[in-house]
Image (cartoon, rainbow, N blue to C red; front, side, top):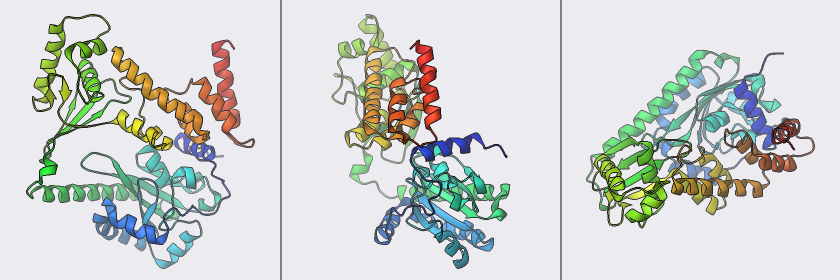
Length: 399
């Protein structure tokens, strides 16, 4: 028996944990025809679909394959090919409006490309559902050129004829071409006079799973810069981003330092940070960020507040500034992680819990493993794995 690639095996685990049945024939339809039309007309990739169809769609039709474009949730917005191959694809539900997120459709290239945010090829029997195993596919993500967010996935699906390295190279080249075209259109629009509302200063902070935060500042006039901050400056920025009304010097000092320090020490750090960020971004009396602030941990909290536990988990890249020992950061880190853990435990969804326990920060979470076991069906192929992990932790804890 041929060895299964680790990447594929992980996807099988995610598919099984989500309850996908290997014998299920078709992928589910999540966008009916009337909603599909409006959704794809409003989608950013609608701007570049004609280019993709001309460059890659034509090549797909010539080799009896299919070109597909999905959004960031796995919904197929465009599926292009010859009438004959499209009819064959209908038998597995590979049609416009269907959803190929691996948690709904099992292991497949578009779904894995979304889950991993990287290029993926799946060959024949590597598919989780048996009905798809006579097909092969190659997919790559397409990102927003302004902020790097995932817009969707570009895919080629066909038979044995596409299982060559040139297929992936062609798909990746077409995706990069689409991103370049999106960027070009943004630059073209940027030459127009800015409206009043677009000149507002914005700051985006990324600190989940990072010891040093990344800050992207946009002045609203097509000028963007990204700064990698030192650990101390990362802590200051995080504390100020979490206090929109600002902090006094005394409040910031208490949150920032484990021991008492002189006010001159804090002022020196803030002066260095101000010289890096500029007076227009870091204001004083009280100290605050004079910009519209977005942050990755705030996004997690917003998803949780809306009850979107899956979206919160996908946004969570790891503990907040994990190396920091600043009291305010430690407290905030524990709050974000605690809110997410409680939501996962209450969800009763084994696939979400599995995502947590497969992470570096959740691998030793005994309570989550136990809850995951209780959420699995009696015939789930994951039960032996989960039971083994609980036994490992019991042994390590001396239970």
